Length: 293
Image (cartoon, rainbow, N blue to C red; front, side, top):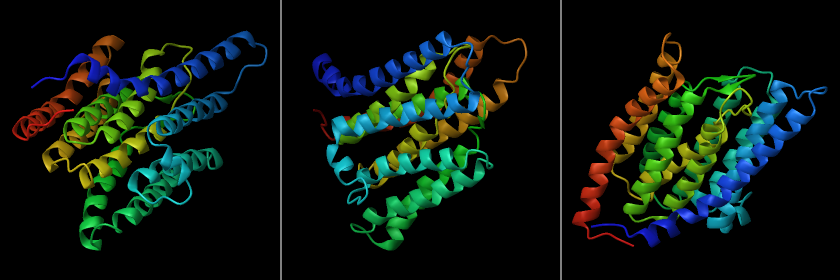
C-alpha cells in the first residue's frame, strides 16, 4: 500500500491557493506597517486584520474545492455548507464584540455552530444519533477552545498554533484515507492557512487569533465523525492531540531557560503522540479495505 507522488501532489495542490493568498496578504500588511512608522497600526486593528486574512483563506479554500458551499452560504443544505457561514459569523462576533470578554462571542459561536451543524445532520439521521455525534465532538471542541487563550494585543501564542496545524494536517490525511478526498482537501486548506503564521513568526508578525480556522477544524471534526465515518478512536486521537497540545503549550511557554525551538519541539511532540494511534488505526482500516485513490 502506498500513495504515489503525483496523486499526493494533486491532492495537496488546492491548498496552495489559500496558503499563498494568506501569505501575500500577511506580507502586504507587514510592509504597510513597516513603511508607516509615524502612523502605526494599533495592536487590536492588526489582530482583526490577521483574522480577516485567515477568514479570506478559508473562504478561498471552499471556493476552490466546494463552491456549492458558498452558493448555499446563507441556506446551508449539507454539513460542509455550514462551515463558511460559521467561520464568518465567528469573525463578525469577534469584530463586533471585541471589547467584551472573549467567552461571550465564543459561547455564542458554540451554540450557533451546534445549530448550524445539527440542521443538515438531522435531515439524514435521528435526533438522538445526530445530537449525540454533534454534541460529543463539537462540545469537546468548545472545551478545547478554552485552552487556547488569545491575547487582545498579541493574538494566539505561536506555540498554540502547532497543535492546530498538526491536527488539521492529520485530519486531512485520515479523511482522505477513510474515503473522503473533499473533506481531506478542505482540512489541508485549513492547515495551510494556519501554516502561514507558524512560518512568519518573529517580533513583526501579524497578530492572529486562530479562531476562524480553529472553528473550521472543529466543524470538520464533526463532519469527519458523522459523514466520513472516522472511527471513535481516530476522532478521539485528534481531540486528545488538541487537548494535550493546548495544555502543554499553556505550561511550556512559561518555562524559563528553554529556547523557543525547544518549547515548540516539546509541544509538537506531545501533540503527535495521540495522532500516532489515529494514524495506525486509519492505515489498518485502509489496508484491510483495499482503499486507495
